[in-house]
Length: 257
Image (cartoon, rainbow, N blue to C red; front, side, top):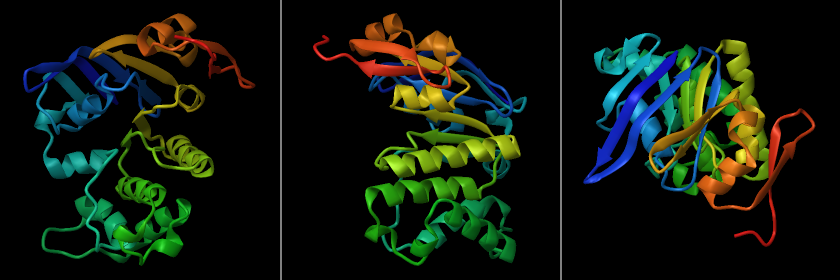
């Protein structure tokens, strides 16, 4: 569904990504991990076509440069980490923007568009906030509203940049479980950046470790989350052991470097 080949991005005079390669099959969840400043968010923006890049990105066999914007918006949804939120817009109206690719030019949203939006807000525990201005939301509530707009697009590919940032533990789990249920039920292809390595290992089918702009490792969580790789690329002293489901759990070891 997503194929990234030889992707390189230069911002100013600095090469942020160099020859990154990744493939995500239909219905798969790939989590991009790596230290701060490694280029994780830039990778997602390049896949979306928001920054110029070398190499190729194909979505469902089509190169992104050949896909018209309206068609692309029906194919791929993106929730950035720090979006611009109009302070006076309500939660419902902002989430409804996710239906824009389906609304005719100079037309209005349909009953179906509003029903889809309402359903997404309900699933994300935002229905009671539907009429509230965005300026009056907490950080965690804003994060969920951004996700709601992306889910309202009903695109088969979902790109989420740190979707659990600013969320408390309960809402982190709620959001990740919802994304996973939608992925399994609707065959969504999911690509996320995630800060928490254990969470990434628990939910994603495969991991891509990006460090210093390069793809340092990729594969199943147990192949990527090794003590040697985490120590080398994160500069952390860790203990990694299998959790109850066999997936790796990363523990910080006190007194490390």
